[in-house]
Amino acid sequence: MVRTETARRAVDGFWSDARRRDALVIVLTLVTGSTDAIGLIRLGGVFTSVMTGNMVFLGMSAAERSGSIALHTGVAFLAYVLGSFLGARVAGHAPPDEDHPWPRTIVWALALELAVLGAFALWWELVGGAPSSDATYLLLGLNAMALGIQSAAVLRFGIHGLSTTYLTGTLTQFVAGFTKRDEPVQVRSGLILLMLIVGAGLGALCALHAPLAAPFVPVGALVIVTLGAWAAFHRRRGA
Image (cartoon, rainbow, N blue to C red; front, side):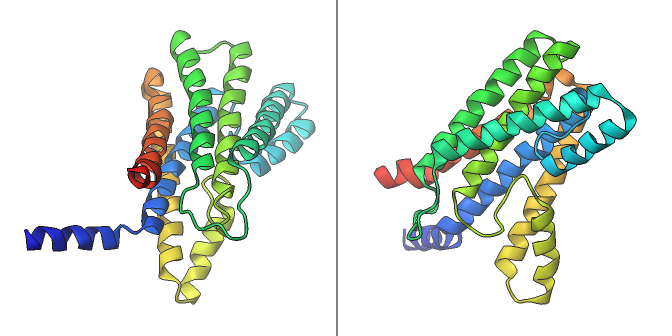
């Protein structure tokens, strides 16, 4: 009994609130990678989270006189902006004295994202994973809106360098971390980048070879994060 209690305390000590939060945020990046891969392969060849990349595509569309690329990037951009606005309204902004590792409003924002991705998944299944050209714009918009909500939700943490969508800064932080002794942030950044690659690989694999299974990657990861955050930071505390 004493050994069991000691082991439990050791596990609780290792899985601090900050590490639980970081683990869930790392899994959340799986949503970004898989959704972007689906968008690039099946929804017009544009990003659903990297809006700077889409701006480049928009400039290229003008040079190439490609109306299709311009429309796809425009839909993704506007939907992402709308999602960011909705996510910020639901999640709010971090106050200076914030001390909760995972505020409840972030759970609500992720639940909203889950509803949007759920609508995408349902529509995707109804069209057999092969949407028409008109439906492609709407499905792309739903995915971009979902990642806009996610971006705003993660921003609510108020932690510098913590992101699951715009990850160029995370890569820079990861590389710069080798020049200073800040191992926890460096490890977190590295795992976030790794999970982005894993998510993109899974999303691409499904989009290419099993289209009907493609939505299950981002939706499944988001369900894990949303329920995990509620169980770890709210239901447990309420009990």
